Image (cartoon, rainbow, N blue to C red; front, side, top):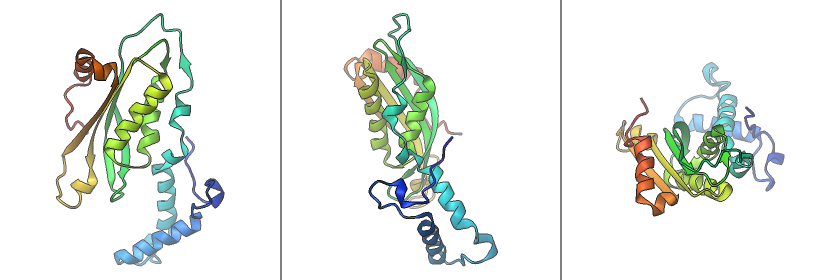
Length: 209
């Protein structure tokens, strides 16, 4: 797996991405602001570790979800029933507090002459999760790119996740899951199809344990 390393301005066509050295200095500033000494032994390598971790956590900015779906298979013997991949674990970060969002995605579609490898569905989820996110927006992005690229009869996406900005700060309510859904095409128009999908994925609950 290629992990993005934001070490030079050349990585960003706008020229606005800071260098790795600038990012590491920003981490040192935050450590000082928090009340610690970035020059003490235990924190000397923390700026490097943090920038490396950010490269992994936010690699979605360098991934093209549409490109991930370009390779499809047409030899499906006329299969036109629901395809569902459920319980896709994802980790994201809320754009308001940069706190973790940890949960599961359930993705379904009804093919129209072609299918895509199931690993690509999981990779599309990650392509959007590995960015600063709002769950509602992420839900819609996943569904829309599948609908636009695969052009199936319909797409359904349900996300359920725990938001650490609510669990570890503010109201301090751990164990609470937020559920969002986007239904397009047949899943929106046909209640029976939507009901079948929801039955397949089970009643959305906090199943992250």
